[in-house]
Image (cartoon, rainbow, N blue to C red; front, side, top):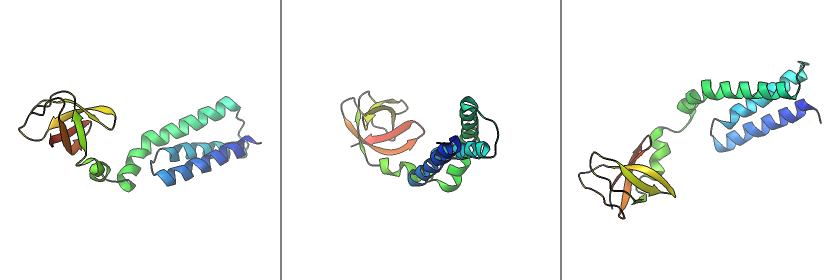
Length: 142
């Protein structure tokens, strides 16, 4: 099978996957593969190493330069991305006091938790997520 067919097919499949999942990440891999396929089809001499370097460079530049803008324009807002976490129960594994963070367990992973109220939440208690801010999960007593 010709290299341009392999790269072209991979590119189309990757773009289709991004349309389905909406990550604005895999799309750049697909574009990199399609551009690599186009260069080979146009007769640009490329060995396997050059093909992979071209694919990697184009994909990386797309992700680094354009993904954030596309997510801003077309992706869900930050509020929408975190909406499904609100009201979920977490386990406190290290005391969370006002003004201090502690460790919580949510969906099998440890997170930094902070309280939204004046109450201290002890290790072993359950709490409820009120909102997220970066990597900090804000909680209140259940």
